[in-house]
Length: 253
Ligand code: IPE
Ligand code: IPE
Ligand code: MG
Image (cartoon, rainbow, N blue to C red; front, top):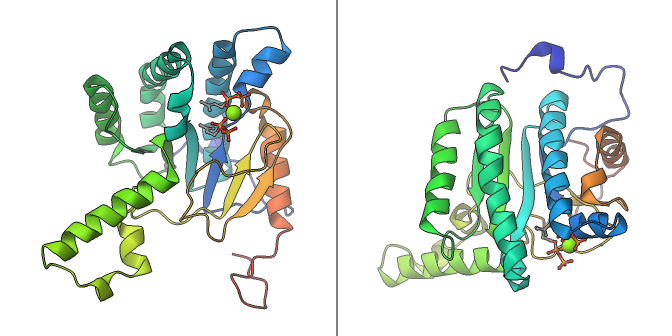
């Protein structure tokens, strides 16, 4: 990664940390963060963006190659209209304020989720961010926006069914690899570690297929309170996990 070496954290004095190849983050608790302070939920989302900006910096500095953040789920459409449009505008503002910095830091951005249901101008913006960072070779920042794991699997199933109907594939050609290659996350490694803030211990339709062997770490703090100490705690907790993948021996990647 061609980032400023002064930013990079020396991991040698930190043997208790393990760096996942792909970190998934369910950024939850913005509303509760705001409520606890007598503020509007929208203020929690604004603070949440600051925590996201910090997370990207930690991933770069600690050498996490891939990070996927859950920023709007396909089920979040059930929220009040005002909150939805606020979140959508925050995405636009984030792109306006942060795209140049992301490019400077060699970050490649990928946005996963359904494009249908999004305004054409937002789809253009998303396409533009992906196009402008496609040549970057550093951190891959995957933003799950209008994303739902079940909908993703349905989309993949439909695509494969069309291939079979057209005679280009037979049912036996449908393998785990082919399904993985038909998901929005095609080409990305599965997440090794998924974290969720706010004390909730559920997956809420995030990366269902890809999370088959992910480790989970749940933090009690709300997303706007996530900081470098939280990040370090997560990596220390992950380092203590034995991953067996169905076998009998622990694998420590
Ligand atoms: C996470 O915070 C952000 C989104 C889901 C968009 P929430 O908005 O879910 O905050 P809580 O869970 O209500 O506190
Ligand atoms: C999950 O959080 C989605 C995001 C963080 C974007 P939610 O707040 O929507 O999840 P539930 O409804 O508590 O399960
Ligand atoms: Mg929530």
